[in-house]
Image (cartoon, helix red, strand yellow):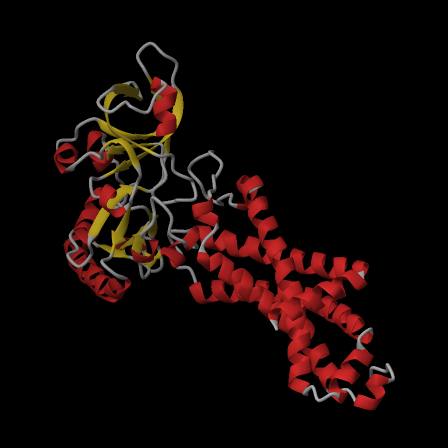
Length: 431
């Protein structure tokens, strides 16, 4: 049966090449545009190395404080200090691990002695950073708790930085200059895409090796640190949030002696909510964001479906007699409608595959435009790979949109064709 539908669909395409070409091109363009929107969303939430545990992440990028003397409604907003991060989040016992790190990267000069310097993106972290994120080490290993507690000048670097400095990636134990201070390399990792917005850097160092703990403002409560919590499973999210609220209440009792109060705006956020949280003093509306995406999908589906429906109706006019004969020989209305929908779905699916492939190709070619981040601490363009763009869920989205587009464009014409009067349809008339 499926083979017969393929043969009939191919025959219809060949009989009306111009209409068929417009039909396929219109469907492919629709799927192309929809898949670009889907991919732009997926790179923010789908897991990929070194953020393979995104489905278990909870983020606290920023926080807010107020003081009794500031007046009602006034607050100071931004990243956390090391002190605030430790007392409210590093002390949690429910998660698998909690890491503190600088909110973004800093362009910092690296060099070898008596060699010109090159700016790279540096992130300062704790030792738990390597438990939360799964980097692919090609040489050496991450710095451990002992090195972090001692504030040792050690670093993990990417393969690109290793080749830039030494011409090879086998560099564990060697030293380089970071802002003219010597750092020893503890490990080398594969390059990280800037689309891994939380883990991305080119060089990672312990924040204890710098003056980051004293880089604070507002009574040592605010600084440049963010936090990511790795839950044992998503089922632990409610318990983790409850523990965060308890730690926040205890912290507020301590700082309340000086009139301060810390509030989190319902943080920590999961990966999806954190991806749209672009301001420290604003809690994103996840439901509104989802509604906006749904409206975009519907527009991109309904507009081409209206045009494709007219083309489908035009093709059916050429088959009125055929449908009448099939009805005369006992073919039911359901079978007629099912055949038309199946044939149209095959055409839609072929065009959808074309649109999907075009969207993947365009994403690779134009990644610096499509995936450009509104707020980024690096000027490096985003890089994409098959592991980021091509997931099973991506194919399922494409298949779903093809199916919906098929129903929208062929549903009514198929229903009308199945209800035609047998005598009139044999005579070649379609009402």
